[in-house]
Length: 218
Image (cartoon, rainbow, N blue to C red; front, top):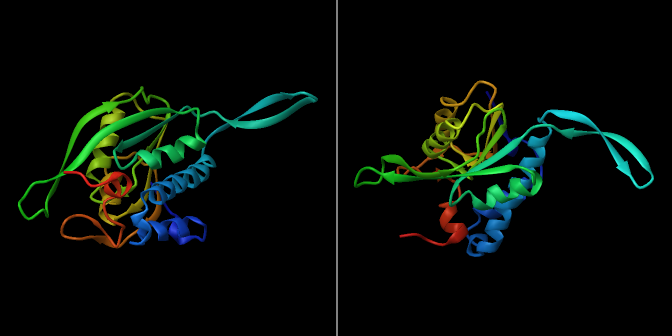
């Protein structure tokens, strides 16, 4: 199992993430969604370096040239609704990919809102058998929603490789997801924060990603 943390290296991802965390920037939903999307694009580019490639000859108007193109069949999956702009960033890079969507959300199971369960309602996915599965979800807090998504998607077939991508992760979430992933899977994070508060939100994090992207929910 490999975990890649982009906060350990210098890139413009740090600027986009700093803006996502900033309370003033968060007042602009368009900017917030765009930065989530841009981090998805850059993460997808870095992930593309790990794919398998095959030789191909391309005909131009003036001749031919040999190159190497990805041979992986890719499925990009996300967890509704917060994952939509992150998913779109990956789709901009892997524009030939198939897509999958899982509706899984947290539910507090006690009055104090300190214990969380996960409820999965809906999934639309092609078979992931033999394919490279990328599951993009911005926040990996408890890891319950991501673990549920991994298990649900893998019921459609055994993937060739699994990549879990998030903007911010908590160590507890990484551990939860590692328990359901194969040994050759990779977790990609723009940052890993120290932990969660009593309500199971990542601290310092940036708040509820779905609400910041699309507005508060009942």
